[in-house]
Amino acid sequence: MESFFSFLSLKAAFLLIFLVNFSVGHKHYRNKEGGDGVQPLSKILIHKTVHAIHEKASVHVYPVVLGTTGKDYEWVTVNVVSPNPSANDWLGVFSPAKFNASTCPFTEDYYEPYLCTAPIKYKYANHSDANYNKTGKNTLYFRLINQRADFAFALFSGGLSSPKLVAISNAIVFANPKAPLYPRLALGKHWDEMTVTWTSGYDISEAVPFVEWGFAGEARTRSPAGTLTFPRGSMCDEPARTVGWRDPGFFHTSFLKDLWPNSKYTYKLGHRLYNGSYIWSKTYNFTSSPYPGQDSLQKVVIFGDMGKAERDGSNEYADYQPGSLLTTDALIKDLDNIDIVFHIGDMPYANGYISQWDQFTSQVEPIASAVPYMVASGNHERDTPNTGGFYDTNDSGGECGVPAETMFFVPAENRAKFWYQTDYGMFHFCIADTEHDWREGSEQYKFIEKCLAAADRNKQPWLIFAGHRVLGYSSNSWYGMEGSFAEPMGRDDMQKLWQKYKVDIAFYGHVHNYERICPIYQNQCVNSETSHYSGTVNGTIHVVVGGGGSHLSAFSTLKTVWSVYQDLDFGYTKLTAFNHSSLLFEYMKSSDGKVYDSFTISRDYRDVLACVHDGCEPTTLAS
Image 1 (cartoon, rainbow, N blue to C red):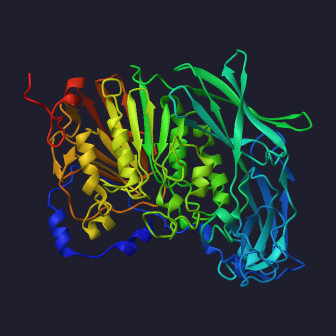
Image 2: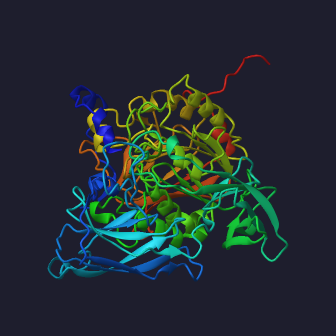
Image 3: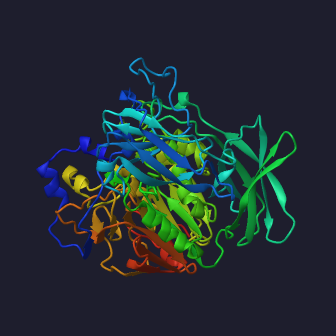
């Protein structure tokens, strides 16, 4: 999203219009924002590699067979020896293990040894031991996940920009590289339906995918799964079409239907091979959704821009996603108090390096396998020039939305257009796709109005709008420089819908910080309260929750009257509906899971129906 700076211009007149010199209620800042926003793998100019194999250099990796105890990850030990060590030497992990080719398929600019694909991760050879620079010897530890192929490690000199291939390791492999892995739950199109999507190495020509599921301790049923994948040709630009490409495997989605409300189910992923044998995953659990409008305790987590990170320290020299594991681990720790998760865009920040999607689905697997993991499309999933999006940048690295919409199910009519509506108990959610046109008259605008109008506020009093880019309000520095304090044109048309349909809260990512805005309409706060809101819905509360893990975004030094709370740190939000009249909002830091900002909403159905400015139903004087 740093590419957004290319749109910015310093216009003092706009600043004078939008800025006011009131102080913000509360601020908590970290001293270090961290990260440069550049995908670490993109710094490796793998196509410039030259052949420099040295007979006295070596790389040895063990164990040779991984996952023998059934785990989908394994720590491996790598012994490195170099006769000419340097601080710039680095070790890349390649998968498949045979990573050179007779020719590269996409350009004539590549030459021997024909390294056409970037590594899936890397470390500098002196990682954790600076003595390597003198001795030329080091032992490193890598955490590998099952990615459907074997692995090899390669030692390079010359740094990332002028790599010289010095030594290649032995190959290692998981016991079953094709195993079904990384299940992602999502709500289906009906309240009593749960979808399960997972990744495997089995095409339908090899095995039939299905899910075996049922109540714990009772007879189970089997539901078939559909299978999808995507080829290199479906990528829209570099690097996804070139050095970032890696075979993504196969994605299977099964629809578990006619679920009983609020019931605990067990499930496992299966593949029936054509020789009659079966391949099974481990057993997982989930709790089905409450009936729409059901009066029970319901807890929803919302955040954006989490990214991914490596638990072994690989790729982290740029501090690319410094808070990603903090947020992931905080959610895992609190999982018993979470019913559903919304990750509103910018998921792994793969940016065209397809191997990173496996890393991301593995990272969130403890969460996504247990509760519905609903996603939205962000610029780092969708944006590629000349591909029909609203923004003509290559923030997705040529992915143009294909991996996200194939690997994650959402109940959209067309997943290439990532907007959808979904219900969870007393909540009604309208999820926008901010990478497509949302302005009045557009296809998406019509959908959003239809979605908001569909909320039965008697049964589902809590109406939530969410999208990736900030269509409402943000005190972020680059929005401040633009003078709009949101996406240009963002709220011009949308605020009419929020007001007309009395949206309670609107959530956004994209900006990597946390900020809460007062209940607001047409740039004016409509309620002076900051911690408890009650009665008529006069305006929508806007929340920026893009501090899920990626490098942080600074706030503008210019103050905005509508900003209630700002935090330059990693965190997430939670909504707790106690009943039809009482809602609790909490913002937690990922570092400790503690609440740093909160408010409550208390009201009755008549308060939602009440006439407000630009939010009144027509009436007649006829008797």
